[in-house]
Image 1: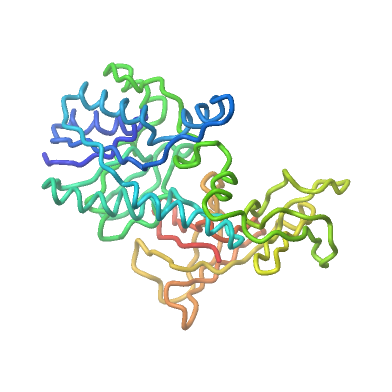
Image 2: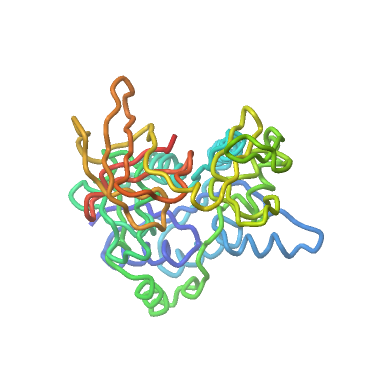
Length: 355
């Protein structure tokens, strides 16, 4: 048995991860990561409260995590990561102003949960770091969870390959229903707690509020069609993302954002057909297997909830860590700033950022 540092967010998943480790005889140390973000308060005080309930890392989440640790009889620490989260929040807002759509959960896993927490684990003399993600680490490989509906490997591609042998995912073999049943049977306070559905630092429930207050909404300008004809005016490119339909001019037929040109202040609109694409450049690729010497067949996700689609990956000459991604069939809304994650069956090969 070993000493394991378990990230406890105050939700049912990380609670059961700690429970399973303790039941297996490991010495568990629970850690809650404070993000330093205070909930936004509107005039009625209700909107912020509802958003906070659907997020993680709030003060009430810390209390829930501490209660679970006490129930399990394991030591518990709440650690201040406000500065580290601040860098992720600044990157989030800046990416929107650049016409890109960020994925802060990937960065949190890469830099904090499987970055800073490993340093903390060393300080505690812990052999491993565990989380409540639905994933599996087998023989140094990252593999998809047995419950395909809950699989979270899309958010974990950025974990360093060398860190995988020290990563523990106790929920990888379980379904969500089984996790809740384990929590109920153990009398954990989080057994019936709702899913965390919001980005933890977007406390108003609308990411645009954060972009506005964290440096502004970006360059204002025009809505245009693909021929450059003006369709209306907007208040800033940072308020839009590829595939967006709401908040656009009424044009008679449904239109979507198909491109964003931040330097020109242009948000390009088209009908649904304009969202289809087959290729993209993927940069800053993190390989979790030996990097390929040439073209590679894989299944690829460009969104967490999409089914992996067959594609070809072509390493780019003179661009270390970059590949050209070519799908066999068109896919919807290839979005700069989002992650592209590569699979072969249940094994995660790696991933990078859509450019």
